[in-house]
Length: 348
Ligand code: FES
Ligand SMILES: [Fe+2]
View 1: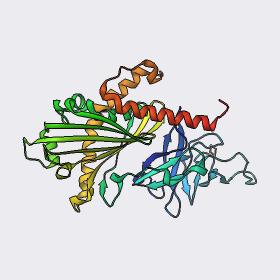
View 2: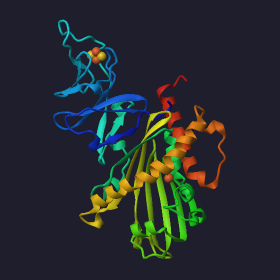
View 3: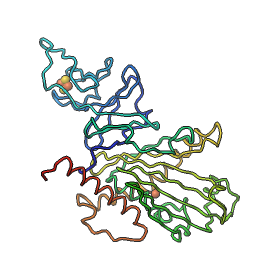
């Protein structure tokens, strides 16, 4: 699949990779097995044993090496075979698997598939919503049978919430003022809705008296490859935002294949909520799984079925004003991919 190489992809939540265990996931079409070394640092190597291609994750961790379950070759965290239990124990030259730079930050594990020399942690964007000093974040995960850009479209164009999630929206959402702002390679898709009345479920979350008229904002910030922060909040109509409250969230997508996506999401609760912040964030994260899974996923996956193997833009999608932000993000990503391909393959 066409995808950026020299970029950090979210691979997993940190808790998915506990010490002493192997964890595996296919990311950007590469099978990867993860484990923690004796110092607790996450390591990532190719999951396909170069002998008879058994998945290494079926094996076990022996010290800081992964032992293949089938014939016992062992591979270190640099991907080199470090032990051959057969014959005179000589290690064949080809007995190695790829190893990938990984970096743990924001309660997540990030992986780099491009040139390892360029895998600079500073290239990971800053996510204020995942700054533990400011917010507590939950951890949610879903797998979607759809291309990851269909998933970022879904968040960048929240006009769908009126139709797909009646629990989250009212008819006023369509009257919202929308705005697309590009800052470097980041794209903001902003929506501002005035004089709305929130569904009672949301009034409760925002701590509002029933029937309060509110101004409401839904501001998404997209960064490549598909990392979206959603600043969502409400304040009494006519009052400044600072007086209101926000219920922000993050939505990070990593392709598994061209037609499947890992969806990492988190509701973020301000630390000002007190000692319960972490519990609240996780509860809210667990609560949104329902609508994501039963309302968004079926539509997004059915979109993918309809699109099949075709390139999305080649089908000439009809453009609505609400597509501006998602469209801009698609164009930025397409440009970044084209530039990188040119850099890696100047002859083409
Ligand atoms: S398949 Fe892994 S050692 Fe044979
Ligand atoms: Fe949705």
